[in-house]
Every structure is written in structure tokens, then in C-alpha cells.
Length: 203
Image 1 (spheres, rainbow, N blue to C red):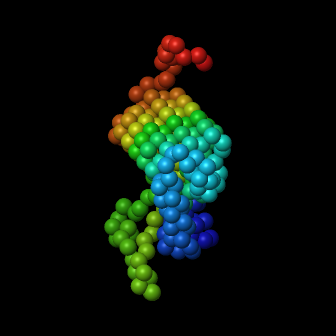
Image 2 (tube, helix red, strand yellow; image 1 turned 180 degrees about the vertical axis):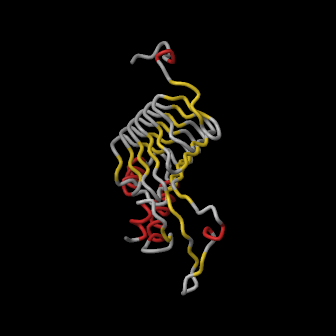
């Protein structure tokens, strides 16, 4: 397996190997170009997003600034919206469903580093360059979710359909469908039901 194949499969990999630094540099350059454009430059912004997110459905809108490591490991559904400062470290697949709203300063973080410092610290290759071993876990956010501002989602987590994740939460475990969940660590507060309907909004 290549280091890229190990990475997306959740196996231990060398982040400096098999062209991974070049892939990250390309994505970071595209992010910088996107972030430098005003939102009125809709055509140019859409073009860059199409180069970054190669598996995105129609209706995707990312306010920016936007940051990702690869882009190619992010899959977005229809009508996905992300507010300011959306960060996705997509070393493993990140799957986002239809009609997902993401508030400002949200981070989706798939990478995991060894807990033991003896395994985590940087190492030196024969040519003198530094590298480290890491692995990653996928993230899945199902349809019709709202991820409020300043939320961090950790690798290995699935958020079920129709969930609302409260501002400032750190999501470290799966959240079942139709849940209002919040906190650090994020916990289910209650189920979302028809009692949550607001007057004056047509279904």
C-alpha cells in the first residue's frame, strides 16, 4: 500500500511519504487562493472549490476562510453551507450529507497521533529529513444537521440525521439521529421533536 492508501484506510502511515507533502501543499495553495477572493468573485471561488472538493454535490457554499489538508477526501451532499473559518483535516474520509449547516469556527479533525511520546515524536530519516507516524479516523455527518459555531468533531465520530450540535461542543462519540447535543465532551441533551416547531414557518 502507498502511504496515501494507508492514510485513508486508517492505518499508521508516514505523513512525509509518497507525495503526501506535495498533495497537502497543492490543497493549501488552493485554499489560500480561495480565501484571498472576495465573495463577489463567485465564478472563481466556485472553480477553486471544484478543484478542492472533487466529490461535492450541487449547491455547496463555503463562506471562507476555508482550510483543508487534501480536499479529495471530503464528500459533501447537496446544499451544504459552511460559515467563516471552516477547517477540515481530511486525512481520512469526511462525509457530509445533504442540507448540512456548519457555523463559524468549526473544525473536523480526522488525524490521531500516538499517545506515547516515544512513538509520537518526530524521527529523522537517513537523508536528514524529519517525519512522524500518525493515523486517522473517518468522520460522518448525516443529512439535515446543524453544527453550531466553535464545534470540534474528532475522528471516528458519526453524527446522525437531523441533529443539532450546540455551540462550543467537542464531539468525541457518536450522536444518534434527531438529537440536540452539546458540551465538552458532547452529550445528548434530548431528542428533537414536533414540539420544536416554530410558528410562522411553512413546512
